[in-house]
Image (cartoon, rainbow, N blue to C red):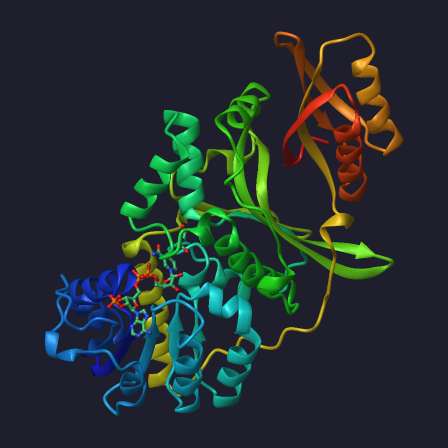
Length: 434
Ligand code: NAP
Ligand code: HSE
């Protein structure tokens, strides 16, 4: 018996890297989608900034408009896909679509990490879907596993490489000795970077994803402002060399973990470059690939791996959500994300971590002892140290045992005040040796 087909008309907000790939994917997969789901998906209207621009997409040019409100309000549009990016006007447009009872699929992590609570709560109230698998790590299914499969798991920590641009840059610098600026240009050319790549290289894109992951993994309200952020712009080729000599690589990690502060549960959510041992699964993640490493008391360790950026991988995740939202619409159903409870966020100064540090000092008797004394006075214990002679100075490379961030930062301040210290180089947090 053949399945009865149901038409679902899509209103697309944005037809750039992701939107254009989605149009192509819908066109290529329409027959297979109809066969498997009984849905015939069609793009009814597309909002862009510049309607005069010619676009390589299988969409009739008469369907383009520069008025996104008209897309939302059109009676011909059943489901809205927002791939414009930015907070405004995306937020108002999504709120309006939800108020009108139209399901929304979005890839907009910046918006969700800033105003997620308001959007999730309106979706719940309106009993329509707001789906966002593509917002974190593009093609990798991580939102659905966190919302569904792992919802009962006592998750303890999630660590991820969640920005394709920076992972691409760090890989090219490490493996091909490519200068930072050339690697960034290449990442932009390949469609990995945000329209303003500062969001990628300064860690803000990864921070938005960290906030979304933290909310879902721990059920707490976490916004972009709660995330401690450091990007990769200060990482030098020398830092990468040092890391390799110590059997590590440097990755920009988004980390969220539960801590107890004064007996109360707190979340630490942070993004920073980290030294990762070459034996850790995250060290094998190269180029624009992403991976999310989830640790839980019952399940142990899980790693999700795949393409974390680019038009087609992101469109793949958007299409999955679009089909899901359309099926739910057909059944007058919706998947609510639930409500996140307020949760204490612990400051970075409360972090306990191992650290890598490079210090250049005068090569004179007693200097090493002075440096070691500063560490000792600030409760920082040295795990390993290497010394390299330069002309009249010496380079000292330390890895510490676990220490409190506040103690470690105080030790750096004190080191900078020593006359024999010429410079304190990059500081990196080290993942999992102790
Ligand atoms: P993009 O290439 O810059 O495309 C943005 C599109 O939105 C363009 O078509 C633009 O129109 C349109 N647009 C922007 N502001 C508009 C406005 N006010 N009114 C009407 N149209 C407007 O961006 P993208 O890379 O596709 O990213 C889109 C979203 O997906 C962002 O939220 C991004 O963070 C997210 N995302 C991207 C990736 C990726 O790898 N690129 C991966 C995951 C998630 P014009 O074409 O006329 O300029
Ligand atoms: N600019 C983002 C990245 C796109 O490089 O990962 C995917 O969200």
